[in-house]
Length: 308
Picture 1 (spheres, helix red, strand yellow):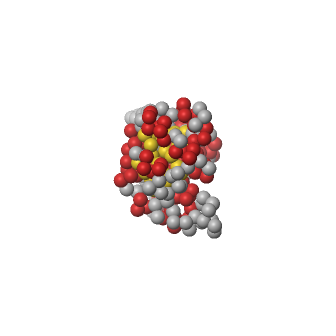
Picture 2 (cartoon, rainbow, N blue to C red; picture 1 turned 90 degrees about the vertical axis):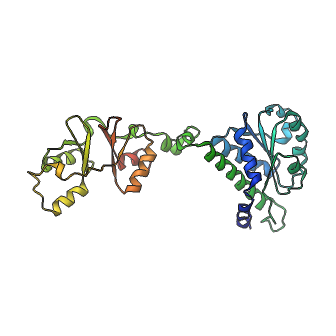
Picture 3 (spheres, rainbow, N blue to C red; picture 1 turned 45 degrees about the horizontal axis):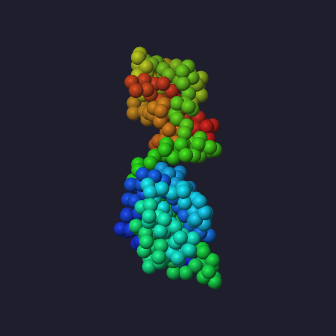
């Protein structure tokens, strides 16, 4: 029954939803989310989701608002008020004050003809036919629908703002999620003397020693100025052996892959991980702005950093 309630929300993403998002995008203050009872619990979660996705927001309890917390709300804010019936007295008490201040109001209710819905600048219909509770009393389907509608608003705003993974990381700096999003390639790559590197004229046999000594299953191939010319990997080695190449006299330039995948030190490590996955490779060459090799990023580096 809750799944059916969520599925029914799709056709309601229309003009009123668009109007609500426009109000929130134009908001010069904060988004205030309020609700009583179970709607209040959902309102808290919606406020938290908005705040973590680029829309400054916080929850105000409607009962406390009538006893001083109304001072948290200003004319530049936009209020999202949740009430399934649209007739909760604690929320309705705030309406004259909000109207007097000129604060924008978005109502999320299950009754478009309710007092709250009629007073709002935009109404989000989160109504359900019946609750999942066998008594049709406990808020179940209605709170689920309101939660999903709130998520839809948050994600629409995220996309409209051009909110990025790096922006998201700044509001989630702790734990594995923050580590995954904040780490840059330069933080985890192998650099300096630890980079496997040979020149274009290096014989294959000598290149194999470099690969073995550095332990990354590959080596970069650079010119005299350090510019990246290509890479030689264990896959290239297998092909060379299949072709019975003379490893002592064949220069690595004749066997290397010239279309190496590269990243920059400032790129997010999580983005580098995506490139590896999409191309089914285990290492990337890190280059600077002059296309000089400055590091190598291997899958094991990402694993050790907790990215993968």
